[in-house]
Length: 233
Image 1 (cartoon, rainbow, N blue to C red):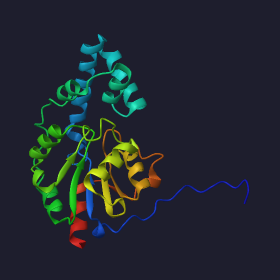
Image 2: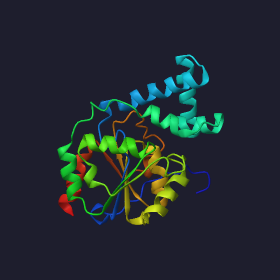
Image 3: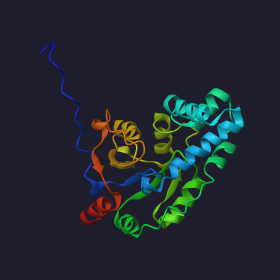
């Protein structure tokens, strides 16, 4: 009826998880818990880089970092667009972090081993960072490929171009794929393409508000959730 308030959009059910052929995993705060606080260290190194590069005080550097994140998706993208920064120096510097807080995760490894289908990493970080983290977790053998920010031509999630490039490079049928991510906003483009989406709660940017219609599964802990999928497969 004209003038009636519309009901909130409801997510489609998503593909049954035992039918998923390609599993796409975010890396940071998804495969290891946010309590490791790696991203806090990365943010500090981002600010330190900006301080040295642009001659800013620490508070101003963090403010600019937050502006870049809001306006461009990542600090790197903002520096590239607004300051014509060559990305390699930045990426090498900000990912030179101590990974001692990341511990082997045998439970997640066992769950991944039982999960049928390809398993890929899709990250706004670098392949080198992903390899280091996976080695610490003891999970490297479970993944077929890493699609990093360089492979995305430095266009980060949730830029739709990053997802299009991922599908092209790895010949993924989105209707038979699932994406696992701690940032709800990064699941919206995946759902729009037809992927089944899994939101891991508890990350530093855990902002479900406004994205509920693109989340098919919301989980507190990834390993037991995936173990349940593998047991049903």
